Image (cartoon, rainbow, N blue to C red; front, side):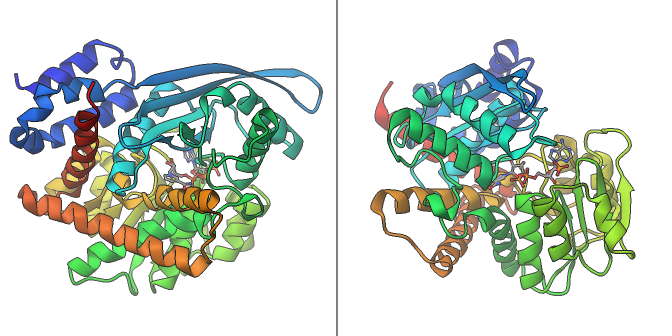
Length: 450
Ligand code: NDP
């Protein structure tokens, strides 16, 4: 048994065994760095494998808050501060009923390597709560955010751990979290990103993940003498990442024809009506079924039961598929349908949306696969710009941020491709990304000593 297999066995037999999502992410990273470990025995001498699979700190806290009927509500809160070898912890906060320590541990683990790949000096973390923002009044959202921060502000700091947005946490929630931190500490530190512009947020932060995903895809396609122009694209999700991916696809001349939410999916063969989508999801915060009521030619498929890995949008023939909703939303059966329909590229906007057996199938059929930790890194990259603008008080225009984002996404692709060439990996961008990220973190860990 080699060192990688021993580490996987160790992870399985210790604290990772019940953490299905975390174990899935961990196994993928460890297996793909085998060629790196073979060339760098110093990583074994410094026991980097064992040191990197355990989080530095797992914080768990109780959140008590009052709803509009003055009833006391209780939720669980978490923060996984996984690795800070490269810089202060950085990662989003998620509010969704599915949040649990396993999901956050996997997201924090992925965040370490994603942040490393950007070349920026930030560590990896993730946090959140099982609180469900759906159906809550604005006042209830504010009270919950204040209670969340009150329970946890001692572990946050602009050179300790910087929070950000994620599922269920947009500018409104970020604003309330920041406001409470300011009251509790009497400081205006850059402890959270994705802030509204009125609180020192960066131009272009809200669109950065979705736009970055399409810039990355464009760069990759350029390398294959291909383009998105005139191509049918399918997208899942209808939140921040999906909406901005759709917007940028239109700018590239592509035709995005699907979107989805937790209750159903839309297929609009004429192209998604972006203004209508924004009105329904961002202004009214309503279900996508209203899209089909207002746009008669569109088809709405209601999601009857939750079946992991399935989504109607993957049944629609397309050139490129962009999963942008949540983890494990594209399984083997859907992957086979996409392949049968001659898909050319999968680019992940969400974190770990593609299940391992679906990835295997894409790889087997030589479908280009752009993994989340590279393709959706635009959000965290612009978050670091936001931190640097807050600290220097020197703010960039929307055009400047967009230009920097394009450069960052292009460089991420170039560095991953270079790594693929160095290790003879062809277009295996998953292994290329994992090796690049792992190497940067491991080198920083060795340089710091134990
Ligand atoms: P949003 O909350 O804005 O949107 C999430 C979308 O996914 C909504 O359409 C939501 O449906 C749907 N969704 C959420 N959970 C489920 C589920 N269990 N089953 C089916 N659909 C679901 O989140 P974001 O767009 O910000 O994030 C989407 C993904 O991108 C996540 O994986 C996130 O971690 C990742 N990401 C986000 C970044 C960012 O900058 N925002 C940065 C990097 C990664 P509904 O409307 O019904 O809730």
